[in-house]
Image (tube, rainbow, N blue to C red; front, side):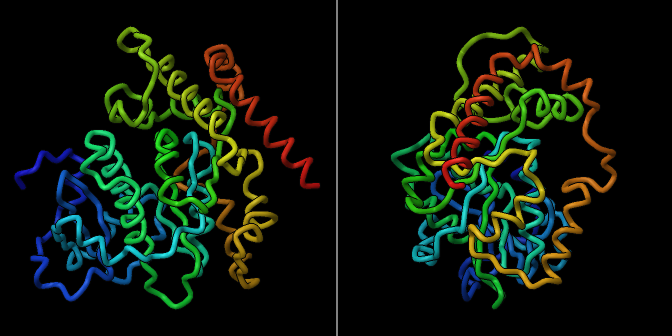
Length: 330
């Protein structure tokens, strides 16, 4: 590999290279990394995406199926006319978005991509080279490649994005003018408490490309991770509030019941009784980690309330919008 790959990208591309000329089609192949004029794909064949995250699905590929192929961007033309997703899921992190994606993925009729790395890889390219990236056309084709229908029962397609992708919502709207956007959120002091136990990359300076986060330039002292995390959360909540007319608002405290009382109907998903019961049973287990022992104690939330003073007003504004919308539809 002569490209400048990150550690995560190298992990995604760990497999036997296959010449593109040997392929009859890209069916069963999924894009994972984008560079200036090249794409890299991994072969999944008929494997369902049932794990909490796309990376997990890669790690569980059969040894014989660890295949990679490199193509030019024009290979995406095969997916130009793919149907748009049923919905995109934006979120603040640690707010139930993985639970939602896992509940949907439990249904045979749903294809669910949870934080597919190609989206982040492409958005980094787009922000660095907007004129050369293909903009919304390339994004639409990449999403089309992710939404391949490989089984007869598959009729719905959801993508859960990374939390920092809320900043790229205008590009997603240009590419998908009619697709619903869900935004999931939770009280900022609760999100912060979860990250204090195990921080996501967006809460550590330098681990997410600055262009994707677009934070204000206020300097912080080294090691002020909580203050940095609140700065990130404020950005997520404010960005969602500023674009709220594009969003279906969903609070953590509505889960899991709202999935079967509202969302399935909203997206015309009709599981058979056995599938619905299996989904409800799935909602009782942790969405990411079987060894999970529960959320932080409420005292941890209370301790963070003052820290989150700059983010909380935007949470309250979103909540008021959500409640106002509920009243109007009653």
